[in-house]
Image (cartoon, rainbow, N blue to C red; front, top):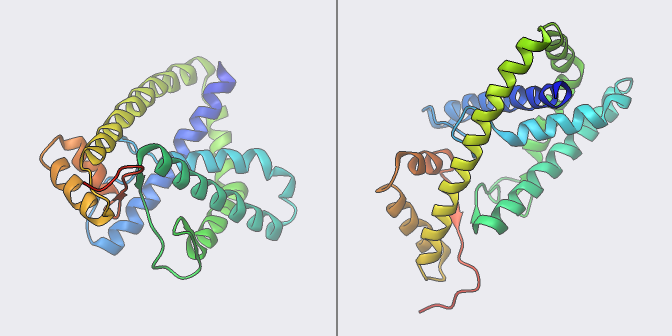
Length: 219
């Protein structure tokens, strides 16, 4: 149980750090604060998963910063690409699109982000992870288990709630039987903004989301 919760604690911490980075970057560009991320809470799971993978795979490259940097780019870019692909296939929506950014791959990943991920991954392995790991290990085991078990329950509820919200978005999009993606997206957003606060939050978090209807003939 302790080992599982320890890994989960790293996942949550790095997901929160990723969420914070997204908030700062987007706020500097859009001049407003928006709760970024797939989930309702303050965490971006893609950062947490990528961090755990890097921690597990890249320890053997700590003596070669350049190789570690390149491997971090590969891991983070692959994670972002596969996440975009899977979410699009499941929910019939493109959540982000880098088509207008130079050196992108199918609009799912781009060179600029990949380099930033490489830098963040290098900082993670050399600076953040040793500090955070030492801090977590200093917490009394019984106290640690209680804190992160409670956080785990909250996170689980958040995941279930968020998936339910996104599934409703998918149902709304599928109910609009048009073949034009732009028209679908516009109509779905109109419907969503008349519904729940949590649904509106998700649209604000991904303002460039594009809904797609698959295998439906135009009426």
